[in-house]
Image (cartoon, rainbow over all chains, first blue to last red; front, top):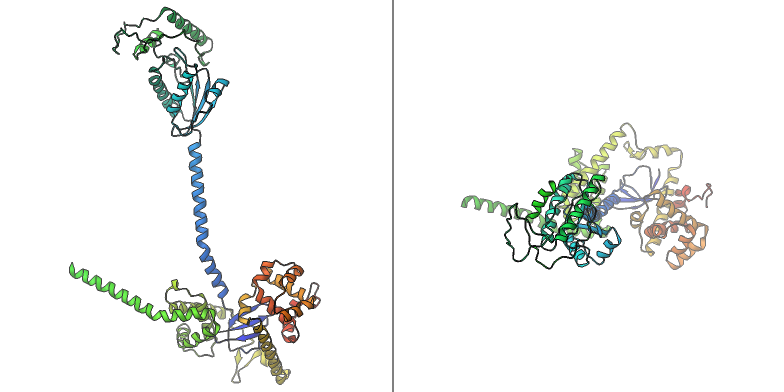
Length: 282
Length: 264
């Protein structure tokens, strides 16, 4: 390559190569107009590029940090909304309540027309499972779907068996406590792990009368005196359910028939349901 | 405990004074360096001022005394110039930075020279008369003619430099603005060839003292951004195409050919 020397300075010269590039090179005693064949190019352009790269490097770091944060937030958001388990609740209206790992409700769907109607305008997001179940139960009571003697069937679905077992117990206990203050209902758990004998957890049907002893510790011999018509209805329901169990024990227990109109008597919490369980076992 | 604290305080004071003392020495240099970045005459002045420093650093690498005739000295000077251009206050002391750069360039040069050991440069001065090989190879030609050509070339270049000054541009500016990448160079050359095919553009340039950028972009089909970025370079190349610079055009002969090898 031939270089024509165009300008000379103390420390460098400007040369023009045959391809039309002007270059700053070391001035090795050049004269303007001289043609040389070997030059040592000044590396200023590289320095500038390095400086520019370095000055903009922080932008790339910031961009990478922003991308990481966005990814982390998206992952956290998705995890929070990820369905960990579902509780199928059947009163007569049927619902599916989806929860995340922390038992916060992330989804609620009515599974039949009454179910859809009942949860219209209901805000469930970010509420704990127990609260949502309580509020649905309250709505069902207000709507006339849930009353004395009704049956609430619950079915849990999750990949984690431990979670399912824990939740069955927890929901069972919680609803019993909640409903025992309001109504008498049956809450069978539809679970393959629960034996048919354990499926039904019955809260006493009849409310306690005012003049009766309100002591909670009732002996086995003591039984509440139920109105005769209600007793017979209950017996009918039991018989029907037993028949159904015999035919296909894996089916969900049918929804109970409507109990006769309830009295206005106070319903007191007692432990008779345990006695009833013992009776059923018999 | 009190003794230990007082010793520590003294050490801290010395360090601080030492550092601030060095910085105080550096401050005038830093101001000069930043001024030299913008002005090549100030850069030359600063280099002239620090010639002994440059010579000393070169001698350290060469392990012998250095003269201004040595190539290494020229390389050290350009390295010092690079240090002026590349220096930032955050990099610490300027002289340390310059010394590092000089050492680095000289080592690169020595490695390159070792690769070419046994080879002789065409331009290397040899013998007592100081003629280079290229000079000896041209023995058949008239030395007088050669010196006339050199003078003519110099005059042409000086004339071109004067015309460029009317446009507020010098060869240093053009070198800094010159495209390095092949693709960019080709795009700029397309614009220059288009102007050569349309001489009225060159007339307009000389008359208005302005670059007809819009027409060059439209005619060459190059990106406007590319041509704008290398404005000074395109200006210099267009001026070379005007009357009076045959020797420089002759040097660029093969790149000014159009497609198919036809000289435009």
